[in-house]
Amino acid sequence: MLNTITLTGGTHGNETSGIQLIRDWLKFGLPSRFSALNVDCSLANTAAIAANVRFLDEDLNRQFTTERLAGDNPAREAVLAKELNQKFGPKGNTRTDFFIDIHNTTSNMGATLIVLENDDFNVKLARFVKQAMPEANILVEDEKAFADHGYLCTVGKKGVMIEVGAQPQGVLREDVYQLTLTMAEAILDFCVAWNNQDAALNELPPCEAFRLGYELKFPLDEDGMRKAMIHHSIQDQDFIPLLPGAPMFRGFDGSDYVWDGEKETYPHFVNEAAYHKLDVAFSTSDRIEF
Amino acid sequence: MLNTITLTGGTHGNETSGIQLIRDWLKFGLPSRFSALNVDCSLANTAAIAANVRFLDEDLNRQFTTERLAGDNPAREAVLAKELNQKFGPKGNTRTDFFIDIHNTTSNMGATLIVLENDDFNVKLARFVKQAMPEANILVEDEKAFADHGYLCTVGKKGVMIEVGAQPQGVLREDVYQLTLTMAEAILDFCVAWNNQDAALNELPPCEAFRLGYELKFPLDEDGMRKAMIHHSIQDQDFIPLLPGAPMFRGFDGSDYVWDGEKETYPHFVNEAAYHKLDVAFSTSDRIEF
Image (cartoon, rainbow over all chains, first blue to last red):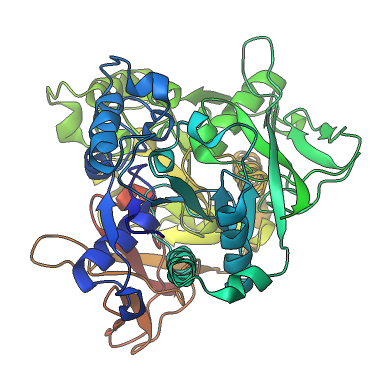
C-alpha cells in the first residue's frame, strides 16, 4: 500500500518541465482521479531554480548515499540533502512509500522511466507505464542495490525518476512538458491500481527495457581537449541500436570513430549538456525484456 | 579593402560551435583558398569558456558601447571588453576592417547572418551568403546606428554575427557545427571577392531578409511568474510566418494566447535559453527584400 507519495521537480534547477508541472499541480491541483492518493508535490532545490542552474555547489542528485548523508560536506546541496532526507525520509526508515523525481535532458530520450530495481513493484510499474504510453522508454539501472544510489528518489521505500528530452537547460518546451505530464499521470494511475490491488496488474505483458551499461567518454588529446564530437548519425538517436563498425564520433580532423563493441548497443544520454565537464558522450545499454 | 579580419568564438562561453571552429582553425589552419586574407582567429571570453557559462558577471556582448567602454564597471566582462577593444579596436578608430563574431542559440534559427547596417558592403555580403548558402537566414538589426550597438563585432569598421541553432548551451552538435563552418567560409569567400573587386558582386540579386522588430515577453502573473509557454505550433518554427489569430503561447491553465498583430510576423529567437531571465519569448521581424 502506497500511503505516502512524494513528487518532486527542480532537483536540478534548470530542468524546467518538472518544475513547471509541480508549480501547476500546486496551483491547480492534481487531476481528480487521483483524489484517493496522498501526493506531496514540492520543488527540491529552490535556490538552484532561482539561479536557473543545475546546482549551486554540487549535484544534489548524487548526495543521497548513506555515507554522504552522514558526512559534513559544507556544499549547499549536501546541506540541502540532509534537510530533504529529514523531511521525506530518513533513508532506510522512511515516511515516503514511493518517491517520484522529475528530470529532463538535452538528449533525445523522449519520455523515459528510470527504475532502480528489478522487483515485482518496478516490473509491474514499468509494464503498466509502457502499456499506457507505448512511446515511453524504460531504463533499468539495477547495477547496484537501490539504497546504494545517491539519487534523491532513493529516500523513498520505492523510487523512480522521470527523464524527458530533448530540452535545452533553462528552456520549457511544450512537447517535453506534455510528455512529462503524461508519464507522471501514468505512474499515478499505476499507484491507484496498486493500492486497489487491481488484478489486471498481474496480467500485464513483459515490456521492452534498456539496462544501463557504462558511460562512454569523448576521445581526448594529451591536453585533455576533445578530439571529436557526437557523429550526426547518432545525434538525437537515443535508444536506437548502434551497430559494430558504425560511426559514433566525428573527429575534428575529419576522421570517424566507430563503435567497436562485439554487438550492438543502445546509446542514451547522447550529448547531454550536464555531462559536459565529465566528457561523457553517451551511456551504453542492452535491450532486455522486463 | 579588408586588410585585417578578426574572427571570434566564445564571446558567450557556452556557445560551443564557434569555440570549436576557432580551435580547429587555430590548430589545422584555414582552408587554403583564404591564404590571401589576413584573418585573426581568437576566443573572446576564455574564463567563461572554462566555466562553460554564457558569462561570469555580465553579458560580454552588450559591453561595447562607447559609454560602457569609457566607464569603470568592475564586472569581469566589462574589464575584458576594454582589453578586447584595445586589442582589436579601438572602436571608432580601429585596426580591424571586418569583425565576424560567432554565436549559437537554442532557437531553431538555422544558420543566420546578422547584419547591422543597410549599406553597400552589408547588402552585397548578405546577397553573396544567401546565394552561396540558400538555407541561410539574413537578419537585419539596423534600428540604430552601427556604433550604437553594444556588440563585440562593432569594434570593427564593419561587423557581423553568425548565429546558428538549435543547439543547447554547452552542447556541440555536428549539424550546427557544419552550418557554422559553411557560413564562416561563405563570408570569407565574400571577403576574397570584395578584395578582388569582383564585378560579380554587383550582379547579385536581392535576397530575402528579416528586419528585427521587438522582443515579445511571456505573459506573467502578479508575482512575476510565467502564465504560459511557447505554443507547440511555433516551437522550432523560427522565421515561419505567425498569422494574426494564430496561437503563440499555451497557458498553464489550458488557454491559448494568440498573435494579435495587424499582419503576420516572423518570430525568431523562439524560446532562447539565454533570454530566460528577461522573460523574452521571441523577437518579431518583418520580411523584407535586401
